[in-house]
Length: 436
Image (cartoon, rainbow, N blue to C red; front, side, top):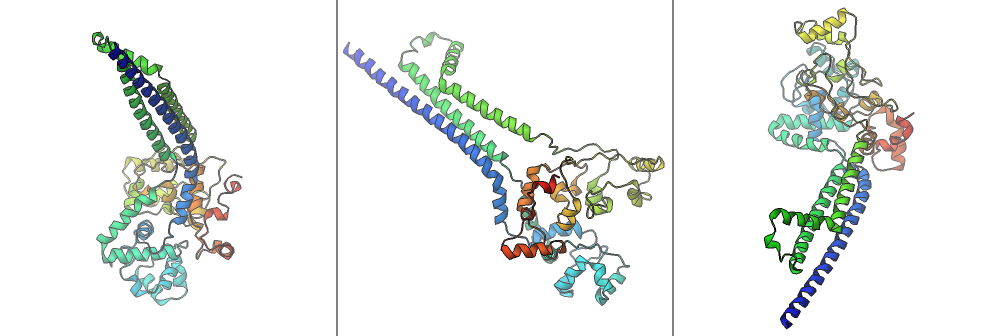
C-alpha cells in the first residue's frame, strides 16, 4: 500500500515537472517566432541599403586586367589581337613601348582627330592599313584605357595566367543585390526550428502518456489506432496548432509579396521572332558591333530596330539561298517592314535615354541586356524594375573624367566632397528624372 502511494506521488511529480517543461518550451517557441518576425522586418529594410554600403566600399577600377579583358573583347577584339598578329588593324603587343600613354589615349578617343593633326606616325599607320577608319571611343577615360593596356600587356606576356583573374571576376559582375535570398533563409530557419520544437513536444507527450498510465491497454491497440490517437493528441495541442498557423501565415505572406513584386516583370521573356536571327553568331562569332545594326544606341533615345537594308549590306551576297534570308528579300519586295517582336519594354510612364547611358555614361550594352553575344535567342535577362534601376544609380560612379559633358558638375562636386560622385548625387534618385 505504502509503495503504491509512493509510486503515485513520484509519478505525479514527474508529470508536474514535464508540464512545467512543456510550458517553458511553449514560451521559448513563441519568443523565437516573435524574434524571427522582428528580424525579418528589420533585415528586409536593411537589405535595401546593403548594396549602397557595399558599392561605397568597392574600389574604383583602373588598370584592372579583368576589366580590361572585358573592354577589349567587347570593343577591340574585332580588329586587333593582343599579340603581334594583324587582324584588321595592327597587333597590340608592345604598344606601350612604341607610343607613350598620352598618344595612345588620344588615339583611342579620337583617331581621325590625331590623323588630321598631321601626326606622322598616325598617318603612316592609317596609310599602311588601307585607310581603314578606326572607331572612336570618346567615352573611355583613364580607367578604361589603363585597364585595356593592362590586359594587353598581361595577355601578351602570359595568356594562361591572364585567364584566371578574368574568369574569377565574372561572378562578381553578375551578383545582384536584394532581400529575397535572405528572406528565404529566414523562412527555412523558422521551419527547421518549428520542426525541432514539434519533435521535442511529441516526445514529451508520448512520455506523459506512459507515465499517466494511458498505455496500460496499448498492447491491444493496432498500429492504425495508435497513429489515430497520436494524431488526435497532436491536433489538440495548442503549440502545434500555433506552429501550423504561423507557418501558413509566413508562407502566404511571402507568396503574396512575391506575386505583387512580379507584376509587370518579364524577366526571362524570349519571344519567337519572325526571322531566326542569332545574336550569338553575329555579335559573338562575327564580332559585329551593336551600333552597326542598332544605329541609335550611342546617339539617340532609342537604340533603333535595324531595317532590312542594313541586313542587305551583307546578305545581298552571303547565304542568299537561306530560307530565313529569303524572308528579308520578301519584306523588301513587298515594301513591308520586318515585324520584330520587342523584348525589352519599359512602361510608358518611365523615361529612358540610351545615349545618356551608353555615350555619356560609358556603360556597355551588357550592363542592362546581359551577354547578348552568347544568346541564340534574345531574352530579357534583367528585371528592369524601378528598384533595379535605383540600385544601379546608387552604386555607379559618374563617368566624369575626361568627359566634357560633366566637367562643370565634377568641379562643383569636388569642391564640396572628396568622395566619388555617384549617379544619385546627380539627381539619379529624383522622381522627375524618369517620371515626367
